[in-house]
Image 1 (cartoon, rainbow, N blue to C red):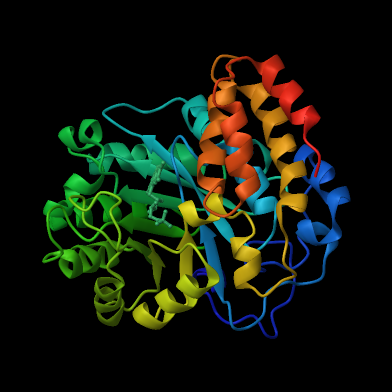
Image 2 (image 1 turned 90 degrees about the horizontal axis):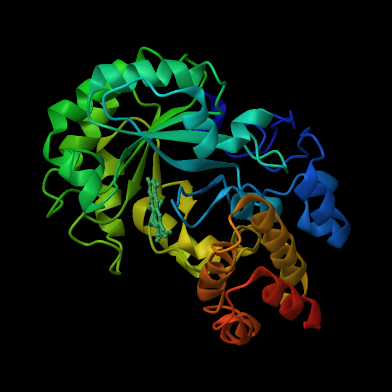
Length: 367
Ligand SMILES: Cc1cc2nc3c(=O)[nH]c(=O)nc-3n(C[C@H](O)[C@H](O)[C@H](O)COP(=O)(O)O)c2cc1C
């Protein structure tokens, strides 16, 4: 088990430019996004700052969010600072050995050392139900040197569940064990190997059994999203169930679900006893959330808007023009929870469908 996975307090740790050195100066290449973000403000970019993480905040991870936290948004969010690592959306494994480009498509960060532009390690998530097939694909993934491998046992999508994937497997703890054990054999010790689970399919009665099965299968740490599949995304997340799992397991548990503010962060830590927390939609709605949790200088729309422009430019380069405005609107729809300016901009964007129109609107904005 690596030091990073244990999420130990930081005092005395040496910045190493590696995953085991959260928020220390990262020796990452200065790539496009970091070079654009850094001049905005020295506090926006961990590359230009001193170690950021106080002992009171041992470990923060950015959640996988398929269709929402795309590679460009991951670059922006991790570029704000505050995250120790992030997980890619799932790569779906059915019954064949995927070509390399399938992993690279989902996690383009693999092309640059499995790090986001600011140097945050990206772990890659696999989803499937066939232990041997998952293991073979894990071997192929490992050859691409991911910053870690994660298994998805939380996806509630009917199409995935119908094919015995994601959260549906929480009805089969024995299969969870076989999957984890098969993949464990292919993930080298020292490369973080985790699983991410919900509490169950319809209720949480087998949550601990599932967690124990994954632990016995050899995962280094377990991420628990405090909802069942039936709960979908309805609040609240059941942090008390995460506490129950944590109390039973010997491996670290990373708590996840409904953390939107620093107050939520301290509440989930108190309720679950977990030191490590994974942030999902809360980080998209407030890209400074991880910074705020760490007690770093407050940032606002003034600092966020330039990042929004950077995101828009990156999306326009990567996504087909007819889809690009939708990506920006989607982010603004969550940002509006915290930023009235985002609500206003979203309103103005609503009817726009062409890249040139969005460009013109953004160019007009004054901050
Ligand atoms: C749009 C969206 C896509 C998601 N995709 C994934 C995924 O690919 N893999 C996964 O394990 N969880 C996925 N999740 C679940 C999140 O990682 C997280 O567990 C969930 O949103 C609860 O955390 P939150 O309340 O902080 O958002 C997704 C969630 C959303 C909202």
